[in-house]
Length: 266
Image 1 (cartoon, rainbow, N blue to C red):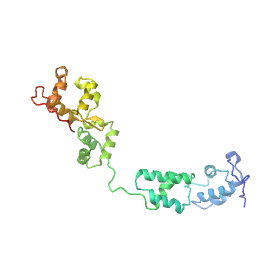
Image 2 (image 1 turned 180 degrees about the horizontal axis):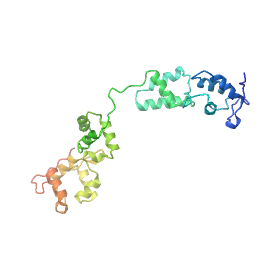
Image 3 (image 1 turned 60 degrees about the vertical axis):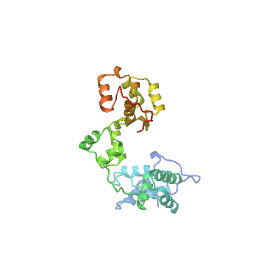
Image 4 (image 1 turned 135 degrees about the horizontal axis):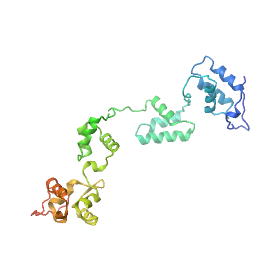
């Protein structure tokens, strides 16, 4: 009976704790006496009569008065409309992007709603897809095996480890590795190791003697260059480690009798 309407000019005004009405304390105590879990209803009733008081302010007053043993404020209940449910059924779960778009569309219609509330509604409608494959658990031993596969392609690594390619790539990023893990090269890598100019490397690429994959020069095309056009590499100017690498790993033949004019392939 003590609750009354305090709206002015038909609009609720914002109020701070200093404007709190002392008589509301007894109303809250009466509503929550012996009613465990009634906090949400008490907040809703108070808000309907005193909309200038926010849910957070009412909840903080309930905690201050010792009327609850809850650690967190109760979740807000939303009245889900058929329109909202239809948006979720048509768009949610088709892909991650579609799910995000559906949530954004609903939040634009109901700005007082939260993303978590929409996700819970989608789960209640049975629209949340469960993973058929459990998440990969990365142990130190598995990390060691992953790093031992340096130079292999992502598909081969995923097959060897029995995980998805996305999982392997994500783990490599967390371990500080990028595209260089898979054995290909940046232009500056070849400029530094082969002691040639960047213009020379770009010329080999234009001629098709080197080939890029995802922005990096492939090791297979560098091997092709070493075997078919070794004269472009200043072999004698290189340090011993690089010379051994070229001859033993990439098949460099300084005086190879055959020179192919075909383009390199990956």
